[in-house]
Length: 243
Image: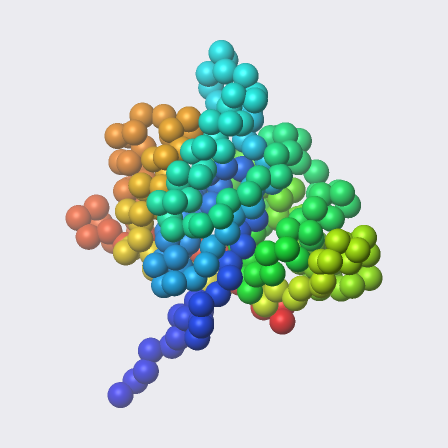
């Protein structure tokens, strides 16, 4: 009898997963069905958002601080739908993210504090967001700074030695799952958790526009070899094994 190959996320024991992305709503948009799949499987998931999302609104009456507060609240609600227990924000201004050494130190600090087995990031090389759209510069900056913090800074005691004085020992992350990847090497069938992704995204009320039209768009994103009546959904990653 032919045995099926193991799924790339068929880990033998519960994993600590740290998701580090730029904006509130990025985790759900980029890979929410995968995160829901992992939460349902018993893995522990934590979010770290590098900005507070204080620019992402068409409403010209709202001020940045009010929007920041609203989007943080929306993100916590969405994370709860996914099954995420902890969300933290670094509160950098939306749109101004730069992968400099100061931010690399902060991300290295977060990694050493959380001590995850798996980190979810995004692709710094993905200039185009699909079709005719540009990828947000914060997404690319976030991907770059996370990858630079993971290797070699987070696992090497000679990087950011001031972190040792804080009691933060080096930590080797085993795997990185790079979302919205230009060159993915992992495809997960997330049909069973696509509805959870949609429910989580509905919590981002400031971002999705008309709720009914949004749900229709999300349900239309099934694979080309499936139909509206029998849809199949996928999320893709570049999986890196560091240790």
